Image 1 (cartoon, rainbow, N blue to C red):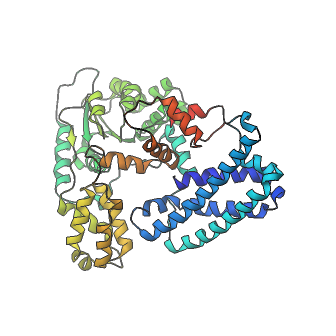
Image 2: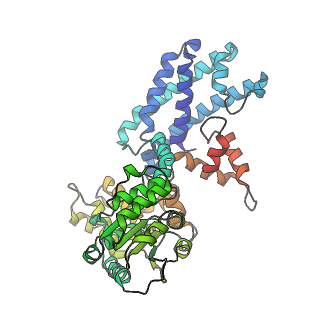
Image 3: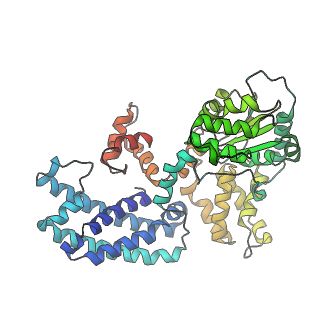
Length: 474
């Protein structure tokens, strides 16, 4: 169960109870209000709790308590569904039927449900008090993430990057060599076929450092001097064509506001901003070729000056191939051990922890880095975790010996790409993804079958008329 998503679902039920003043029927309206308040206080920190649950045993115990409380809430709802079916309410539209409300309207069940809600509220009270000891940080709640997913058709703010380089994540000589090679490739003179712009691809698994390398190239002095128009565009898995075009127009110095939403009008505005200019377009985090072939290619090819270039970052060689990127593609390799150690130290050092003490822990640090597979993002995350743990050798040894956070046991083709993609998912998609683990293997499943299962589990939220469409979008 993904706690953040379930807390959102339970919160919705409580809001419906309050709206219909059904708490008065049970004599627990105050308790229901309190439960809603506690859930609102807790849910902003559930994402951090889930993240720290990977390695922190005390957080694991707290999360376990909260899960059991949430399971109790699920049991209450299951009981209501059972009672409703016993009383012949199965004919009620499943998309709009609320079993908790049914039970509250039924005096035979109201007392039992009311008593259990009070008990659950007391448990949440204790859980909330204990949460203060963990200093959870606000990583955003389900509503924040799900609104971002809905808005991701307009660009995903949670993944939105810029061309500005964060030098704290730059370590070692390899990235400097890679930057020089890519700059030379981008600036080389080549005979361009009409209707084409040279596309250069950076390929690698999630979190390997593709964006950092692209930012290094984008900010290189030679690149800055060579191209008149330099555009950084985070594409993401889901995008809205009009919003994508507007962002490119703004980056190109054009007027996006007066262009409206029509694709043809936006194309004209983009052409006006780029006509005759030598342009570098960086498309970061490209999941498919549609953003280029279906949205940006035609206006750019029509008007930009000779020598213009497109630089993409992608996890999938197939995307680079379909965008006819220049071969060979530039593959980003894992960090060498010494470079990974330098990055880890950067993340761990603070005003309370000096470099001398950290250097004395290098032997353990290198073993932790090995578990991270030299993946920069994993090293950064672990560095932040170790900073919270402190500089004692036994604390680092505990982290090293704790296998829960390690992803090196996964098959080579799945390890980081799947794990990090999962970590990027909002809670409601995480629980849909995890549901696949319950399905028998070696069987073909059709999308509508899986969506129906998700809906029956309450994973898809919306009006009863569009649940299937929402599920397909999931």
